[in-house]
Image (tube, rainbow over all chains, first blue to last red; front, side, top):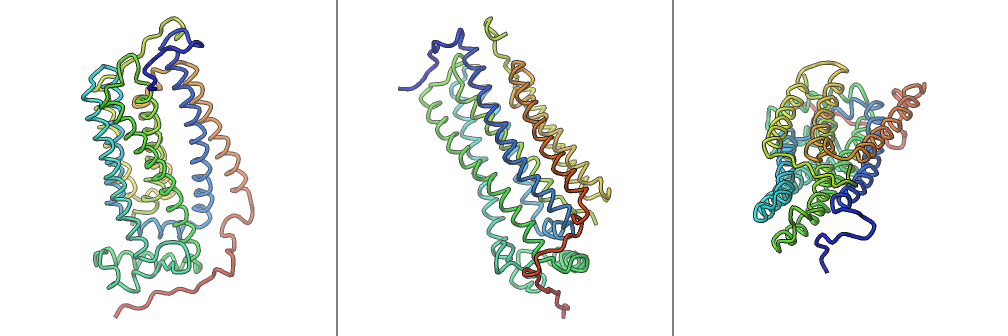
Amino acid sequence: MHRTGALYGQFKTLAQQKDTASLGMWIFLVTEVMFFGGIMLAYTVNRHAYFPAFAAGSNTLSLKLGGFNTVVLLASSFTMAMAVWSAQTGKKQLISIFLTLTILLGFVFFGVKYIEYAQKFHHHLVPGRSFDITYCVNNPNQCADISAADMAVEREEIAKALAADPNLNSHAQLYYSAYFGMTGLHALHMIIGAGLLIWLLNGSVAGRFTPEWNTPVDLVGLYWHFVDIVWIYLFPLLYLIDRHK
Amino acid sequence: MSEQGHTEHIVKPGTYLAIITTLLALTGLTVTAAYINLGRFNIVVALVIATIKATLVVLFFMHAKYSPRRTQLVIFAGIFWLAILLFMTLSDYVSRVDYHGAPSPSSQVTHLRIRQSS
């Protein structure tokens, strides 16, 4: 059975029923704020204690890829908002179109994230035994994807960071643990979100969402926007620590 | 109030377009600002811009501006609790004598150096 907007006995109106549902969603999102907040706090404490390592680690990330993904995710929030608008105004075909666009943008984000993660494995920047922040500057021929100019900058930066913190390699692993932990949990949320969007698309193609009843679109929208907000913070925290020269 | 048949506020596409444009402009601004040396204020600027972006998303994309008061109260309470978490923990850390430059686990010490380029 599909719930298509029947009024349950404990509510007086459909509007009240929907307000209650979105209140519940917000309470869940508040628990998510505390979840990501705790991780960002751990990040802040370590960043403050080991700033040279965090700055050097941050500068090994690709700002182009990270910036591109930020734009992709913001755009997906816009298409999600438009899907909610289409549902509220009864434009049944537009709901499916905007949901599809949102899913596609989500997958573009995954694709770019995959490229970034693969690069980090390749560059020996995954915390563990083979972690070596000097790997690329010492083996430039193994890191052909870094341009000569960028490599020269990286060499200088890592030399400076090593002078400031002789134990740079273990502290840079703290940065990379934060990077993989935070972006990994964020990506996990996006995978769940993409699953929910596909479920919504199934419903919208069947024409289930109407101006009177579109609660699932609205609530998944709240979740998707929340995941976007997490990235809004992750982008400057991870990619923009120490870009100025 | 919702009990008296509160009607849903529908945010117009034009508003969404204005918000997404602002969000993209602020993303550009935060990258630009990161390339300017503001010393310890770089992080302040970055977080202020991120918070403006997050606020726009919450108010318009997530309709919090048009939500019932009690939903707004839940959102506010969540942010307030997060502020307690951050403020209390960080005020503990920054007032510890051994926090800055704390010695790292010596078992992890590896002596790296950069080879001279030929």
